[in-house]
Amino acid sequence: MGGHGTEASAVRGESRAPGRPQGRAVAADLRAQLRQQLAGRVCLLGLGNEGLGDDGFGVRLAEALQAAGLAHAHAAGPTPERWLAGSDLDGVDNLVFLDAVEFGGAPGAVVFLDAGQMASRFPQVSTHKLSLGLLAKWAEANGRTRAWLLGAQPASLRPGAALSQEVQLTLELLKELLSEPLRGAAVSEPTL
Image 1: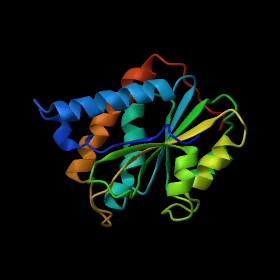
Image 2: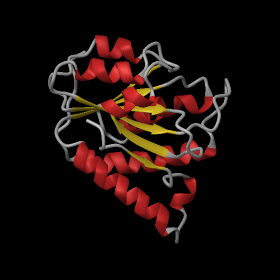
Image 3: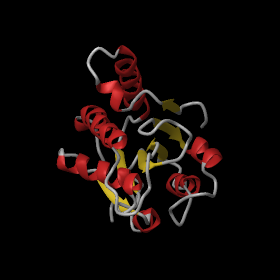
């Protein structure tokens, strides 16, 4: 499973500025990778705690995707295991966890990892009851679904804070990147 993930560290607020070819190139690379890896039926699951600054990134991205017309985006919040336990993923080819993750990048930087990479990079430590690695194994237990992480490096996890400017800009870019390829794709609405 390894080898499919990428760190797209230039996908941050400054990458959106006109005349910044490096940022556009990284966004184009990430767009191409999302299209290639997320073929088939896709479900997007936003994780995190909205009351802890950038930790709410995944939930807010899922909500923004829902508002953009992607019904297969769900906000699981700080307890994704509850959502997974109540879902039938048999019709889902790809489950993408949307989350703020500490991976050592600049604030707002993006990482796209497969289940094996999640398990090796995030084996036990998590703000969720179950780590991302365990959640990925759970999602892939049916033998059909592939689990992915689309994560953003947080700038601040301060209680009561809004999303940082860097993470908010990343959210807006990822909303565009995810909406475009998935709008026409076969999507799956897991049975809850």
